[in-house]
Each structure stands twice: as C-alpha cells, then as structure tokens.
Length: 257
Length: 257
Image (cartoon, rainbow over all chains, first blue to last red; front, side, top):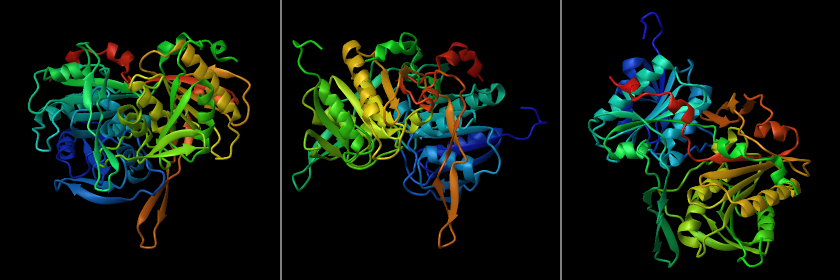
C-alpha cells in the first residue's frame, strides 16, 4: 500500500468470543496492514449461523486483547457485533472486516452454520470487503501460524484488489504450516446420524447433537478436498442465494391454478 | 397425484413456534396433499438464521395443533427442529418439508436472517424437497388465505415436478388475496440506521435493533419488487454459497507470497 494513503482501518470479529486465542492471532495479522479495532461476542457463539438479536437489547463493554488491541465485547452474535460496530460503535468506516481465526474448519455445509462466516457475511452486506478465517484444528492451542499466513495473503490480496460487492472470502487452513493455497468452491456435504438419544433421571428423553460429516462431492476443486490434502483454501461466497440455473427454466404459468 | 401411490408425508415446521396461527394455516394446506406431522419450536425463534443448538441437549414434547395435526414441540431453533425430526422423531422419511406460514415477509436480505427459511433449507440439506412460506403482514391475525393459496400451488408444483437437489423454494405472499404469482430472484437489499441507543437507570448504554430496510435493487424480477406490487413471489434459493462468477477469474498464483 502506498504511504500517501491513510492506514487502513480493520474491524476484527469472531464467534469464539473475545478470549479466544484465534482472535488475538487474527488481530496480529490485521495490525500488520492497518489500525485494528475488535468488536466480538462476550462469550462463545459457535453454530449460531446468521442469527441476530431482536428480543433483548445489546450492550457493549470496552476491553483490550493481549494488552494491545482495543475493542468492545458485545452480548450478541457475530452478526450482531458487526452490525452494532457499523451502526453505533465505530466512528470511522472500516476498510476491511475480518472474522476469526475460528477454532475448527468452516468448509462445505458448515458454512451455513458458522458464526465466524456470518460476521464476515454481515460485513459484506453492509458494503465492506470481508474475510472469514478458520483453522481446521479444533484445539484452542493449535498452531495458528499457517492460518495467519493464509489470512495475511488474503488480506493483502483484498486490500490491493478489492472485492466485488456481495462477495465474502472464506479462508480455511490447517494447523501448522501449509504448502499451497487454492481458490476453491464450497463442497456439497451434510451431516448424518446426527443425534445421540439419552434418558434423564426422570425418564425423559433428551438428544445431543453429535453428527457425522458426510462429503457428497468428489470434485478436487472443493474446499474440503483441498483441506483434506493439507492445503489452505479460499472460497468466494455470496449472500445472493438465488438459484439462477433453476430460475431460468421456470415459467409463471407453472404456478397458475 | 396418482391414487396408486401412498399419500405423501409432509413435515411442517416454522420459526414463530407451535402456537402461531401461521403453522396451523400451513398444516391445513399440507393436509390437502398428504399426511402431516409438525415439528416446530416451543417458542418464537425469529431472526435466528441457520442457528443450531450444540451447547445444550434438545428435548421434544408431543402436542396437537388445532385438535387435528399431531406433532412435537422442540426447545430449539427451526433448523434444530428439522434436523431432530429427520434424525430422531420421524419413523418415515418425509416427501416434503414445509416451513411457515411466517408472520412477516422473508424476501431480499431477510432471507439470511430468517428462521422460517432456515427450516426449509435444512430440509433441502437433508435431501428433502422443501418450501418456506411467509406472509408480508406481521399481524398475527392477518388474513392468510392468499398465502395458503400460494403454498397450495407451490406444494402441488413440487409434488408433481420435484426439486433439484440443493434448491429450496422461498414463497412470500401478501395478506388477503393476490392477483398473480411470479418466479423471482432475491432482491439486493440491506438495513440502515440499525440501532436505537438508550441509557439504562444505571447510566449504561444499551441498543435496540430497529433497522430501516433499504432496497438496493431496481430490477422488476426481484422478490421485493413483485411483493411491493401486491403479487405473490416464489424464489428458488440454494445452500451452495460459492460465488462462481468470481471464482472463474481467480488464479492460485494471486495468493502466493
């Protein structure tokens, strides 16, 4: 970036909450490129999808991550955090929104359930170039250096080239180092055998979500295929959900009485 | 449908919960086509997006809607309800999943936040033809006859023609009657001026989500345009979020060091 320009302003969020090692790791990378401000959930908000809070008011509290990165913790979802940052908390428009680093991959069908991705998608909806970053390793103490490197390359690419309106970049990388990084598409996949049924002391059934992931996609260009090979993956995703292929073949007369 | 076939089995869900007039209205229409079973949230779950419950176990309780339609109430989100129905509660695979009738439209960017749509999308992910139905009128006592007629036509269309894997139909209709029903695409839109800031008795700020809807789309083929004309709208949507247009132009070399 040219020295003549103001330093970029980068909003950092996530779904694991402000105390997650992943958000510190992402803030470190973002700070290489610009001024960082964190607005993130005050507690873990995994699997909340694109949920927003409408029944109770939101509150925010100032805090500092790693004695370095200033921010606010919000009693809401990742999408709430980015909305509230945009609508109330920031006095400067961000040049970029980054979300993560999530502890656990967000590839294939997991994109639908991901709070990490939803924070970035909300940034995109609001008109900011936005990136989600996830590590395939669930462990909180996973080595995030490769994920940081993937984030670094994608942030650089986006700050230099921009992103078309309506598109979010969804980045996944393995723990440790990766040998290559690929543009990919979302793999077709789903969960099977989803619940474990138990009986409580009062003889009532309850169900834990367990879930066995099933890849329905043999393509080598998918996010999950690339991750399974130990590489890093960047998938452009969009919030226009229209299935244009199907729409083209449809006539309004199909729906008449 | 041919008399020689077994009556279709239709799973009904929603996000307004089991006590909503909308779910009764949708169950009535579904029952014209097949055997109905309801699995829906035990309380309102609006704006939960594609959230799923992973931190606490799910429970379900049997109940009957309008003394007629049997079902179960679940302490979870709309996506949870469809997942749990599929994984635990149903002993027969549904031929169709329908969600709604939501009190309030789910068009344009609202599709992202909609619990109603997420129940149908979850049905699609699990491999069932799935339809979401919403009424543009928020009032619980809105006249749902037009929405029922839109649902009737779309259910008939799907039972006769099927739906490609990965595609959900998102139906919206006005309260009362409609004069025409159109295939549409998701309008580009967003919310602006999103929060109202207040101060509590202890001098701390809190923020209510208010939000003013902004249509960014002038096309006459969008869901919101068609609804604004008082017509009913059917939008095919997909859970493959890949932005293929952008992907085609990208080279992996863009992301090297």
